[in-house]
Length: 339
Figure 1 (cartoon, rainbow, N blue to C red):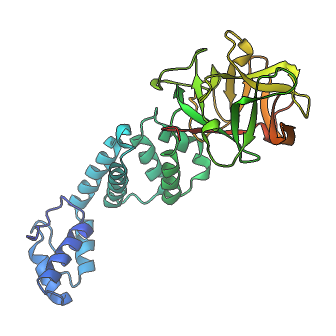
Figure 2 (cartoon, rainbow, N blue to C red):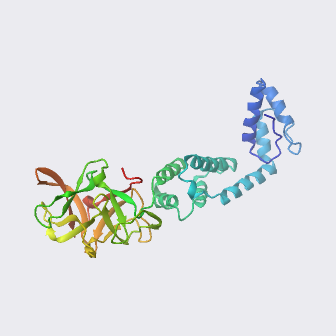
Figure 3 (cartoon, rainbow, N blue to C red):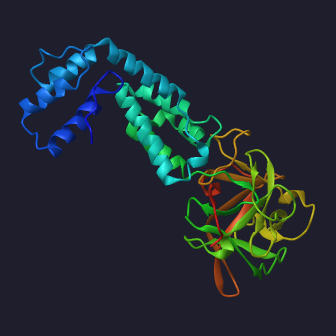
């Protein structure tokens, strides 16, 4: 490795670390010899002849006008920096982007977190999940470490699209919304039972979200599902959709019965997701905490109440039109490839 002349086009501390590496590789380890070698590699436009230590050389370089010009050029790079959303699924590219950002901040000597945060947000597309997630949590972010933590979390957030396979985990009990097509209510509609079971994902817990009253052939990345818009929830294995039917009573609490049905044109099967922190122009993201209600404003709920059907116990899922509470919260999870 050939030593580089310092001419004001790089950061002096970065240049010095490279120079020290060369010195050590060539058995130049005495500080006085490193200092002399260092002086010979600095452009004469920067006078370091009187420096008596490496630190003094760094201070002289930083006080030269060329260093201020260099910092300004790096700041301009930061303002122009844009993260490529298409590369957020490539772990190596993510690390390159983050390391490049932090290195540029270091070389521009931008130490104030507010300025770092502003530049980081500017590098993200305002339409990206990452920008939206971090923006929604800005009040909780007070350091670069916390900002990067939320950025990492945002990478787990993916859009729920028309045709996406999803799972709904009941927040209060940690169990998944499920259905078995051949297990039916003994009273009421006598349709297949919707219940919650298992704290881990099984095939009976996978649903397909559809903006039309039919099961989509495949997910459409150009059709995200938004808060405030209606959709249907189809059971993956049976092809039937969730039905909150207030004309039948649930087995235990006598709320509206929840089942799956194949009937067409039932407006009560239209569902809508809500979240107090989201607007109707926000798309639903994986890991969002949502509530679900049908066109009749009956809200999907589960609780600790259980009932027995053919000697097996099920945790009840119902529809209600009372005040929303903790038992009405569901964590929506994108299921990439089924299970």
